[in-house]
Amino acid sequence: MSAFKGSYTYSIDSKGRINIPARLRKYVAPESNDTFTVTRGFEKCIYIYPHDEWIKLEQNIRELSPTNSQHRFFMRLLLHQAMESTLDAQARIIIPKDLLQFASIESEVLILGILEHIEVWNPNEYSKYLASQQNSYEDVAQTVLQKKVM
Image 1 (cartoon, one colour):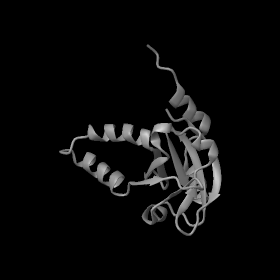
Image 2 (cartoon, helix red, strand yellow; image 1 turned 45 degrees about the horizontal axis):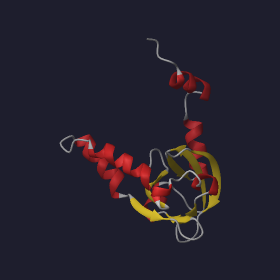
Image 3 (cartoon, helix red, strand yellow; image 1 turned 180 degrees about the horizontal axis):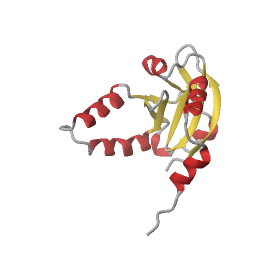
Image 4 (cartoon, rainbow, N blue to C red; image 1 turned 90 degrees about the vertical axis):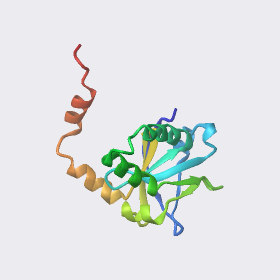
């Protein structure tokens, strides 16, 4: 089980490669064989899943109904940009150009560990995202972490 956490700022090279930080790589399960699936995330970021976590997500996607138009739309958007990438000798993976454009990434990236996946952001877009939130961290935490009364 992955337990990615933390934030890291890196550069992206001219070939669209980013380094996966060592502190995140240590949480990649050996059965993933340094293989990741890169795809569109929510808001304006890119999601990177190690192979074992991607397989779990695929199992959930397989349970969606092909007769439901929202399910089809979601599957199409998530999967049409999904690409498998393996770490190279310098611990880098390739991010497809269409995903870099989607996330407005040009030279610098903010890499966030989000438990089972990694998010890649344009640092300016992430700052805009945080500024656009209407509730404080404390208010959201109270709502999200509130114990249910039985």
